[in-house]
Amino acid sequence: MKPVAVLAAVLIAAALPLGAWAQSFGGLATGSGEPLEIFADQGIEWLRSERKYVARGNALARQGDTQIAADVLTAFYRDSDRQTSDEASVQGGGGDIYRIVAEGNVVITSPDQTAYADLGVYFVDQQVAVLRGDNLRLETAEEVVTARDSLEYWENFEGTPVAVARGDAAVTTDERRLEADELVATLRPNPAGQNEIVQIDALGDVEISSPQEYARGDRGIYYVKEELAILAGRVRITQGETQLNGQRAEVDLASGVSRLLPTEGGRVSGLLSPRAPSDSSLPVQSEGQDAEAETAPAVPPEAPSGAQPLESEDEAQ
Image 1: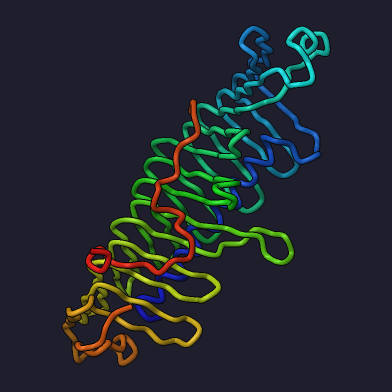
Image 2: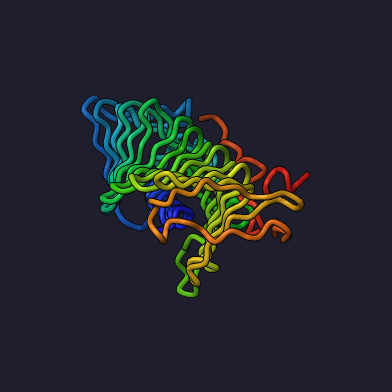
């Protein structure tokens, strides 16, 4: 695989399991029509004055094939518009649940992935699921997604679902690793009505590595339908002893054509090793051509941006 082409494959791997996990967490919180089972070694409390339910001690909530385990599970509720607080008490339950919190040794399991965190929160009104912790990770059969600050899923960010991994975000497979300050995947419904990823942004200090190659840039993006992967800003691609440098690199996966591009009026550079494999170098554009827990967290203003051309910092200026 050519160096820049690694970007597309790894970015897809980074976002798919995150979205699948978060949708499962959201389904467990809001209800899927299946019975919800709750277990706890130290009992389940209904604190009416505080409007919350608390399950303590190896607490487990299970619905269908998804479950959340934690030291403590807490559901916060408010009186619904259709009943008063007294009516809610008489009927033996609260009104609308607006936040669910899992604390301590949090493990969220569904058929295809398992997530680990110290804290998990689902904001029902905003439809936002968040995981935080010192050893935050999401494991599937093919990859491991990690982040320093949070793993998140936004069911409806400005009308579209978004999955986010924040802070030293990384996805590791057997063959390669993608790292960035943040990974952001934008999803939209396909003709069958199922959400699918249309765009993935890697924001800040993007690094892609495998035993055969290394690529870096300030930002990366993958347009799924167009099958176009891009690195931008201080791009460096290394394979063996061959190194190429520029401000923008892009690969058209449909045609198999890859290009390393300069900024306007600039140039690309390269150190080519005669021992490098014949398919390891990228066609380079000629020098004279132009280059083309209490409140829900906030998505950074630069993501998602929609399927817009990705400019390097130099081009933007």
